Amino acid sequence: MTRSTLTRWLLPAAFAASLACQAPEAARPIPDGELYFPSGMFFARPAAAPAEAGTLFVASSNFDRRYSNGRLTGIDITKLAIPAFPAPAGAAPVDVSSLGTIDEKDLASLAGELDGIETPTGFRLIVPSRAEGSLLQLMDTSGERITCLGDPASNDCSVGATSLEANRLTSTGVPRASAPFSVSISKPDGEAYLTSLQQVDSPAASGQNPTVYALKLNVFTPDITNDNFIDLGLVRSESVRMGHRYAFMTGAQTLALRLIDRGTGKLLNAFVESNVNILDTRGLALASDESEVFVLSRNPDALLVMSARGTDTDAPVLSLTHVELLPLGASQVVSLDKPSGGRVVFVTCLGTQSYDATGQAQGSLIVYDSKAGQPVATLTGFGFAPYGLAVQPIGPGARFYVGLFGEGRIAVVDVPNLENPEDIRLVARLGTSHVCTVNPGSRGCTNPSP
Image 1: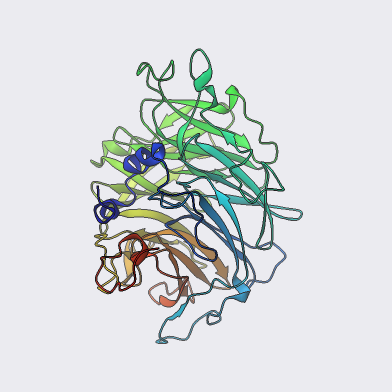
Image 2 (image 1 turned 135 degrees about the vertical axis):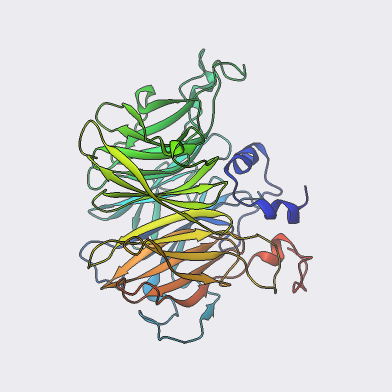
């Protein structure tokens, strides 16, 4: 498969997981100060800090294994050469090649989503990777500075990280979680759940007794035993978000959305598929009061809106209230409260994923108003394969950082007031594009690949 063909598919989860066994093309690091196929993103701002402060953490997945490792980059947003919030209406977006004041630590390749929780000295982050060993990497941060928990003296957070495949060497080969992908941390108790994209067999390499496991742990005491694994049956899990009583977890086909009782471990099926025919899911978001649940589907690409009742009881009830068809490649979703009531939902869609350095960039950011029951804005043409989302709330509005998976940059987008979410402004693009590195034959590329 050529690199051009590979990039047409980018993020289908099953294909991404299949790359986990491939060796890197060369033992060389991602160039300093660059992002490479950014996947997970997290915005960290201490509770006592001003709204304009904070650090953006970005996981570079090294998706095509060009380099020897992935990377976690901490970016001090106050040092970025971009307009203050909100950027003036109608102003041209700025391209900023430098990420400013940063810190970088290596990760295992194929990092998925990441999440974090505030600590007395900064934040604790957790990053799962789907590459060899299915590693669970934790790190502490202070500002943009990153310290790996596995080996605090190392610049590689995969060193000393826990393998979720360690039980392969036991007689049964389970429990284990292959290709961990999504993570969500409950605040402030630190309990986290992780999803897994692949079935595992028992005994290992036997092809028998296929099972999918999720994982739960406390990020403050992250020792993992067999009791931390949750048997999900045959259907893989995709994205997870923590509620007060339940962990909400998307999957596929007959189990598009499941709830896991955090106290008892009981599994509940939301029966989404009884109301709409979907083959697969992607991102997931909860309203802050858990009264609405937002699920992204693939085949078809759509936003599924569900009302939720009784999410603090033994018998929660979820009802599908709206299906909004989306552009190709629905991926990540974030829900923010409007001061007047209801929610504004932001969705990234990868687009057609045609690889071109100078042509119209594909992909979109969709803005959906849950009270209006319809999209109110669509931002297009701002970058190749928008995927990850991180949010910096500021006053009545928010600044969004959108990971451009297909080109290795970050788009900065302002919504000055969530009461008027149709007013959405592209502010800047951060970093240098890797399009010509990945596919030097693309139109507009003149220099050979390194």
